[in-house]
Length: 203
Image (cartoon, rainbow, N blue to C red):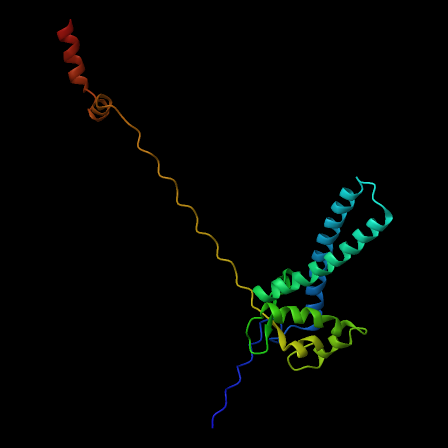
């Protein structure tokens, strides 16, 4: 009876010493993503606040608008991670730090699985980031939400961009020369003897 072979672990990336993303790398990537999420949320919030300031709304309506803004910010945050993890496996912060989220078998995440991973993320942060410290002791550097969602964070090697080939020199267009000018340019100049004979005949 033959069982299925376990997939080979990913190879370590040069300069990291490991194939799996470390604690500091993942925290920096998350901080970059949080900065992007907050910047977009603040920008949208300011625009909406300025638009609502044009109207004299009751206090109850203003409180409702603030609550709706909070819900929208939460949906935006969850959608941000779900979209990137289920498409490329990399958020912009992950891309900067050269890490990628995958399943334990190396497969990409579905939308549902990426959504569940986002919902499980608070378990690693509360209380006091206890679930994140598992990254330091786990063989594949998985946090608590990674172990539950069966995901890993791996390094990806940066592929250098190929330089675009230089543009060929533009060919000079041929200049039209009239036939008379061509004949004049190709005929040899008269010799001194010919010029002297012409002067004598003219005299």
